[in-house]
View 1 (cartoon, rainbow, N blue to C red):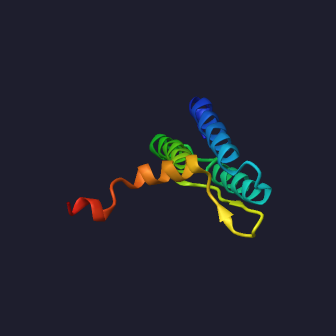
View 2 (view 1 turned 60 degrees about the vertical axis):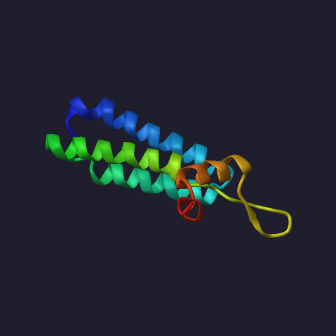
Length: 106
């Protein structure tokens, strides 16, 4: 990767790691897998030199960060062996879906 893109790539990588940590806190297995995938993708593309390619990969990292923060909800196992989503996360996902199809017919 060209030296001129290093600060942007590093910032994108750090932002992605922060998003993973925030989303998967408490789930060491998922966090470990996500960290490994993020690192692997950056390592695979480390040798890129083309301006357009490097810029696209940095944009991909920002998109992945946004997706993780906005679209991934980590459920927690309850005492009765079911999984629960916090009220805050449930409301966030409901808001993201928009109005339900039953409301759109009225």
